[in-house]
Amino acid sequence: MNSNLKKRVAVSAMFFLSGICFASWASRIPDIKNALGLNEGQLGGVLLGLPAGSLVALPLAGWMVHKFGSKKVVVFSAILYALFLPLLGMADSIITLIGAVILFGLVGNLTNIAVNTQAIGVEFCYGKTIMASFHGLWSLAGFVGGVIGAAMIDLKISPFLHFLIIGILCFFIIVFAYGNMLSEDVNKSTDSSMVLKKPDRLLLRVGIIAFCGMMCEGCMFDWSGVYFDKIVHADASLMTLGYIAFMSTMATGRFIADHFTQRYGAIILLQFSGALIFTGLLISVLFPSIIFATVGFLLVGAGTSSVIPLAFSMAGRSESYSPGIALAMVSTIAYFGFLFGPPLIGFVAEQFNLRVSFMLIAIVGAFIAVLSTTGKHILKTPSKT
Image 1: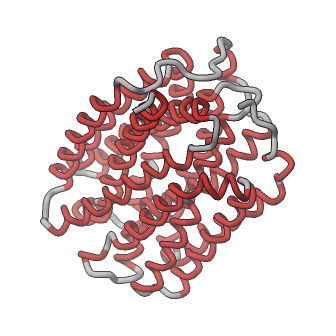
Image 2: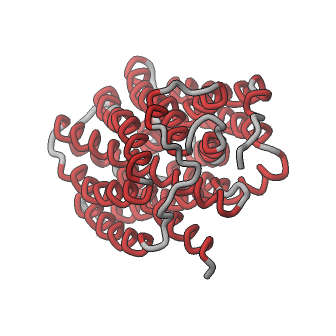
């Protein structure tokens, strides 16, 4: 195995770790909601803790990656991610759950920024776009995590024991990947004041597109199970079907997205992605049956698959900032979508219903296509690499 391939495998393993940790939590949200007796509005408040913790991590992540390098940061944060996951299963009240979710979101986003910085470095070594394949491993882990979650529910295994098993698995992944991750980040600037500067036009536009993508993803991660429970009225054994459907096409889409990006270009792919998200959610809202909702969620997964990888790859090609700083800037904007999306769905559902909430997210998905079309001249900014 050559040096570049070893690096790619190691970084891919860390993406898998990040994905399976998050998916394990997402797959048990309906269980935890029911165990604590939470209504939709209360769950929306709990889910606010994840992006809130992520937002707290963003300036910290940019500074840590800039100062210590992404390898040290990703190892440190991944260890904490594996340790904090079981805390979610131990929560016995809404207050302790919110606290655990905030910590989980904080270390999760530290891992996210650091591992994406590693991915940009490996992409630089290959000399071509391969970012979507890394995110494909994250989504594949999400699919695997959803299947494991469904099995754990069927076997009546508690969320705590489920999360503890996944946490132990994560430690083995860290040991496996550590030796072959990049020791030095590419395009690293020595100007630490860059952390405090505002994004340029490219990063601002990319950040807004990522904001919409993250809002759509957050909707599916946090509310797909609840939607199948409350609106589709699926049996308990099928509550995770929508999530699994979404994650399956999201993972598949990311493994083939690099090919389509090279052939058709990022802008056309973003336009198509926005159209798929809108169509999938519209079908799920208008025809909330097992079959149609599952088909709709499959389309949403395909649509969201390319948005964040393309946004992060574009950020890594910024002519103004090093990859770690550029990713922190774009992620700061994007995670406001994660911040407002899931709780907004809960609050709107409390006033109306989940179908109205999902229709609102469908419009957000369509906005991705609009932003990509109106910002062509900005998104075509030349790459340094």
